[in-house]
Length: 161
Image (cartoon, rainbow, N blue to C red):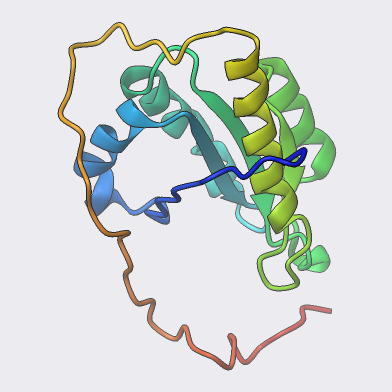
């Protein structure tokens, strides 16, 4: 990023409830959090406020956030339009973009955006403050859960039009 090497440690819990108790400990040490919703699932978008509340409860005060709408390649299945999501993110003063993990559209840009936001905050002198009680540093391996039907060949029903 701007000629500097940035190390990112990524924790993907896929929004699964069973990881909720352990994810709260990861929020505390995070410098940035990317909230991803599915543009083809209104409930996924509607539930973002729950994740944002959890971030407010557990993450440091100045943690950087980024809202990402994924699956923008499925245009005919899209139920959350760009404008609605952008206005929501703007109201929260959180950067926003849409991605497609399938086509890799904007995936790298999401991480570059997050890294740049963190770099700008740190460079401006805003601390990574956490007014909560000190907590132990947890070192662990990323959580990887196999998904039923997920495999090399994709979902078999590629395309929606």
